[in-house]
Length: 206
Image (tube, rainbow, N blue to C red):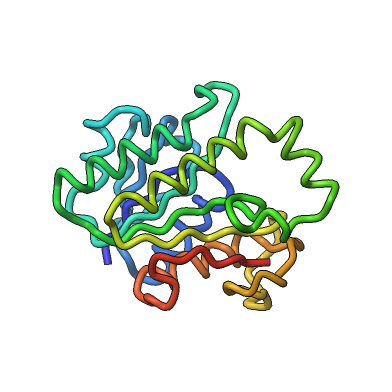
């Protein structure tokens, strides 16, 4: 496949790029600072640019079979960069007419998963994490209204550990937020590109 990746220099996004390349896929990655990827691979195309630029987003999408979005909030971007960037990606996909498959990395605690996070995290969601979580709420709403073949992946607390394959994922509301490695999240995200079990669904992974 050819996979377009947005948020490729973040923890989970970079894992998606590395694992996709290791599996023999072609990857088109949008990065404001391409040097941050520091990867050399004949199957990797790095587009220097910003997810808030529609032209650069369309360039990243050219020829793609599927899209992975792993955007995060940073000090150098507006508070709504995740939802705004996702809307630009969605609009570009709709204009181009392809690809249709899109998987985004969101977070447990968003939408109907609010009760799957511990009390302490709920307090953070109302204070220091209020704006990022509201941004993810808007992102998910935009995706659900897009008409695309979407899946929302909601991980628990992210770690930098290796891929283990030992994680719990699914729609059971009893799945509570625990720690999961970015590498395991990336492996699960890549599997969703061809597995439609969670089409138009939002599985948790922890």
